Length: 147
Ligand SMILES: CC(C)(COP(=O)(O)OP(=O)(O)OC[C@H]1O[C@@H](n2cnc3c(N)ncnc32)[C@H](O)[C@@H]1OP(=O)(O)O)[C@@H](O)C(=O)NCCC(=O)NCCS
Image (tube, rainbow, N blue to C red; front, side, top):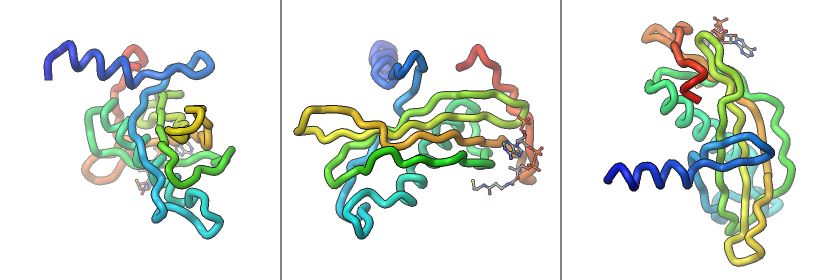
């Protein structure tokens, strides 16, 4: 991939919502295997996708796979997601600590063939901690200018 293409991909994945800048990290297509008994997206699976998405985001920021989820904040399911929805999971860094990073994750959904309206179906904050090879918290040395 050339440098030009890399810059273009980066631009496409940056999204502004209410003056906050997010990175689109992962996407999912809601299939029938993802639904609960009420025929909407199973909430536990969405949390798994959110945790994975925020984890990838933090791994890329800290350039290490040695991170763990310390905390997932209150989760509000604002709207249901249905079969055929395309989900986008977006992340931004909210707080930088010594060993931790707090990330906000937003999940938004759209039906491709309807009005293309993006519905925010969930948002929550997650705290990740960088660990050493013994599983103990370890300074990540990430600085604000890197955001
Ligand atoms: C992550 C872990 C190593 C942290 O251990 P700990 O004893 O809490 O460590 P510390 O008290 O030094 O805290 C480490 C960081 O977490 C933050 N933290 C601790 N408790 C917190 C809480 N309740 N809410 C938010 N942040 C918290 C601290 O502020 C610190 O961040 P900082 O260095 O940026 O200030 C340990 O709790 C652990 O292994 N938990 C299990 C993780 C896991 O299995 N996750 C699921 C799979 S990924």
